[in-house]
Image 1 (cartoon, chains in turn blue, orange):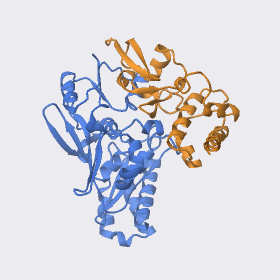
Image 2: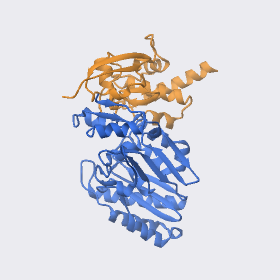
Image 3: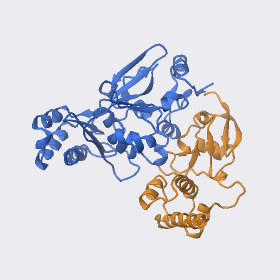
Image 4: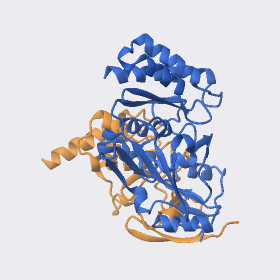
Length: 277
Length: 162
């Protein structure tokens, strides 16, 4: 039987061990585009949509973390409690495709595909998210920074399944901004997530490098300046430093030069929003 | 060549058997080419146009991006199932009355999106309507007549309710 719809993680990891070439699919919004255009011809598919813990999310205020299962759709992150706990994730979720895509797409798929343009990934990077991976015999948790290793490449082993992520809550402002060729239904040309925790700024950049880039030097600089000293000209310099840390390429969606410019502007804007709140 | 699949989908409340299918077939393809339900339209096949919108377990999704064989055990609703007796729903009637249909290719998907919106929000504001229909592309009308049709359904439903 080439299509499996397991209803537990144990069954899913066992099926993957027995069918190492199987495609893992949750919403299918990435995989099916490739299948429809004959870029992929799956022989075996394991659908993860019926595994209860993959659809589960919870906010644990005591431990200060949010757990989101792999198959929770973006639509769930856009409003309500999750959006209040993780405003940057809500903003990123709202920029994914269309309502129809957000009803199906999920973090598990974004992490599995691991495109530098994945809308949720800069958020997971800036918020120091932990990715949970399970095989038939092992379980491990990997910081996002170690999870994404290249364009569409991650450190998931062939026999592992992503069950979900744990995202530490922040006690300061967080936000997300994205540039595309139009307002709705776009793949990002450049995106930035900025989060403030304990008075320290974290910034992560999407679509401007082979992986999501943490602007570590820009972070160190702005944290030495101090958030209380942020003026428009300081924010401008922050943007220029972020721009210098980006490593974009020219492709069919944009030029490297435009991406460098855009990512700097977005970082400046987000920093000003964060301190002006 | 991969094995062929046999499975059963629940569509508009009815069990429909699919035999000798390739696993990569989208729900849109299976609906149109195997089950004789051509109401959902195929245009972009990459989730950008919304003309294939159906409901899977009450969520409005693009049927072109659902692998049909993975939808076993879900409740699927298509535009054909909105009014099984063949008469028009209030949304469909409003599209006709307000001139929201030109070539008609996007209409089934838009009708599904509008019903979904109004099922969840009886009095959406302009922003919410635009947001809810942002996944459905119409290349003829410029959307003005479509928004007029939505407004008309909202006010007709309001006046019948009161």
